[in-house]
Length: 162
Image (cartoon, rainbow, N blue to C red; front, side, top):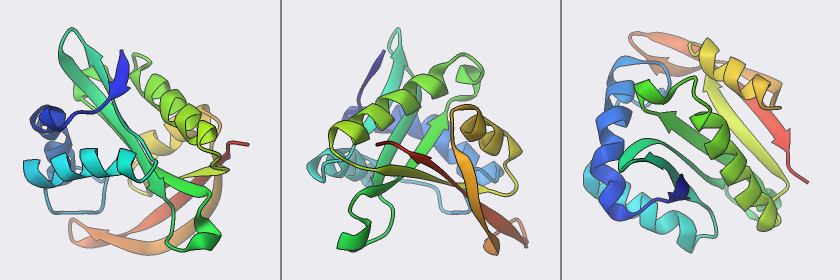
């Protein structure tokens, strides 16, 4: 089941998100999230007209997807950027597709025009996933992220929603 995230989901989400922050190139951010900041994010996204959704099965959180404005300013008010993170056991089971469909539908209903993914050059699975659901690679920002002692490319992928 896909549903809006609740602040009490934060601890369950951090169980799979923080290890990815710590140990992978899914994100360049090396700082783990705290429960308080994640609770704030879960509350803030819908207040801004955006979504923070979770996939839940039998009480277990399998992943989340959220989105917000791609860049600040009115000129980008219809361009969104998303984050999608899955628990290890949820990969390859359609959970990611279901979450992406849900946030894309939410964004369309709000009148947003495009969704952007910023995918680490060190995350080929993330690029393949986005390509499989209709995202096109539109640019690469070479050596723009730094993690694990080296620079990594940021691959920008885009899907036009309207």
